Length: 304
Image 1 (tube, rainbow, N blue to C red):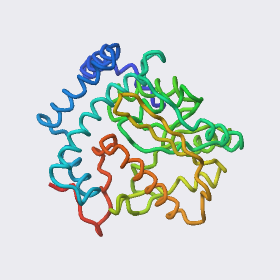
Image 2 (cartoon, rainbow, N blue to C red):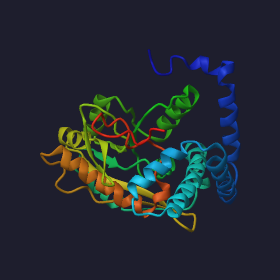
Image 3 (cartoon, rainbow, N blue to C red):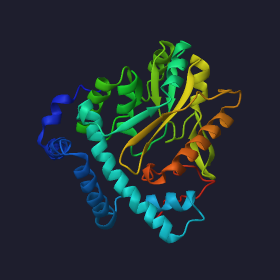
Image 4 (cartoon, rainbow, N blue to C red):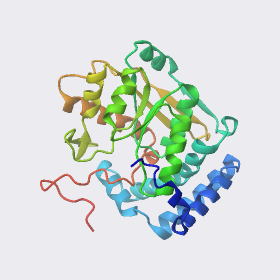
């Protein structure tokens, strides 16, 4: 059965609240960016103080990753993160629906690294992490250069349906995250594939490796995929600037990658992510349980 085989059911009454919410977001996408940022700050304050969605997870992650920070510093960073999450919601809408002329001011640095990597003819793994700017970063990248990407279906079927459509619209090819053969085919066809391996889960391609010095399930598949395809691994990261513009930086391909040690390669990627997270820590996706399911040898840091 295809992933869209149940599409007609999306109009059943149980899905109407989500359609109404998405309709509201579609309308707010038409607002100027200063108004969106104003709304994001209010929404961030409300969720942080009144609803407390995953607030304990955020505080746990921040305390683990910034052990020398004071309570006041952790609280301020957590509060800024919720503003970033709320703004990220409006950025998702812009990434999906906005005309190019309506995108916020942004610059792309390092296009030449991507072009040179593609000129080799073996494909490119566009390596990044799960930041709150992920969706609009993908849009900026696709506006700059044709790219494909991996995607994962959200739990809500309405959102999953819309996301698949937007992925197909802005990315070519759009590959489901569990379609390894599709990913390999795309890279061998010299595609540039957007790839964020920093939300690991227990699998044959994972190990427990340090992330900010804390043991975490870590995806080790990046080097294996690069070895199988000959693809270059080109990191890129997006940062919101204080003047409300965005800087998308494409870095040179990783040198001497992959090596014979997949764990060392994965640790190198973790360290690269850590460096870029420290440049804008409030913009990383701290609501994710990065240190979960590590097995009986490790404490459950998210236990109540």
